[in-house]
Image (cartoon, rainbow, N blue to C red; front, side, top):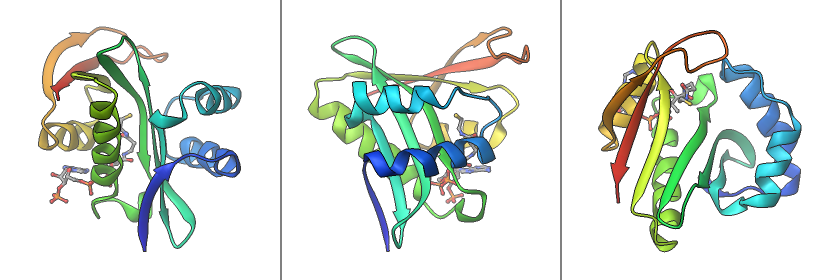
Length: 145
Ligand SMILES: CC(C)(COP(=O)(O)OP(=O)(O)OC[C@H]1O[C@@H](n2cnc3c(N)ncnc32)[C@H](O)[C@@H]1OP(=O)(O)O)[C@@H](O)C(=O)NCCC(=O)NCCS
């Protein structure tokens, strides 16, 4: 059975492993603990039968704005609504916290994620040149809540 919930201490290692497997950026593992300690409401995991198959990390950037920093679903579990479930959970949590605008960046080459965010009501704002460590460009996207 699929479930999404806020992260717990025991989730951190499997989340780091999933991030390593599925995201091109190489994050220092300590940042996952930092997000867990500083804003656990924005750090969500998706579980199938108690196994972590996806996660989302978002933060509040001002009283009324939030930013999604990472969103990932295990390769074998994609296109089954898990990304949408994590995002919906995050948007509800942010709305409860008076957030009116959610922003994110996505690689201009990441067609799947672009389609995903468009379908979830995010709109393209601008191109951010050489945004990523490897020099790739990003689109910034935004959704009003
Ligand atoms: C982007 C990502 C999180 C989507 O998660 P997901 O669980 O597969 O998404 P969902 O099943 O909830 O998809 C909902 C809709 O988004 C769109 N979508 C999702 N993946 C897509 C793809 N690869 N190509 C085109 N559209 C896609 C579709 O419209 C889909 O609806 P459909 O299944 O009816 O066609 C997932 O593909 C992923 O982890 N990618 C690698 C990491 C990444 O790029 N993260 C985002 C940038 S940080």
